[in-house]
Image (cartoon, rainbow, N blue to C red; front, side, top):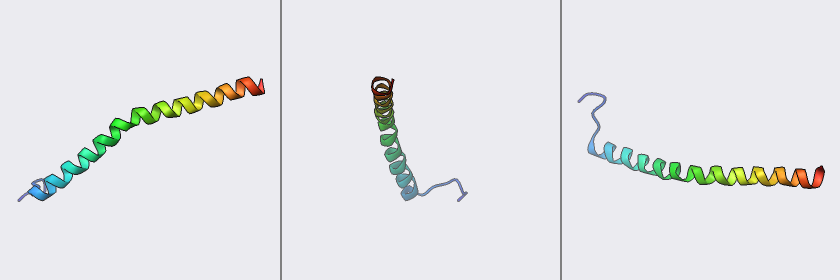
Length: 51
């Protein structure tokens, strides 16, 4: 057995980890949008109240 050959259990665990990571990657654009909204709100407050 070479170092790159994985057992069935190892392949299943690796696939589960990849699936978990993929779910988090799908959430990243939503988090990015929320961050942009927060930054926009801070800019608006600064312009309106401190200009």
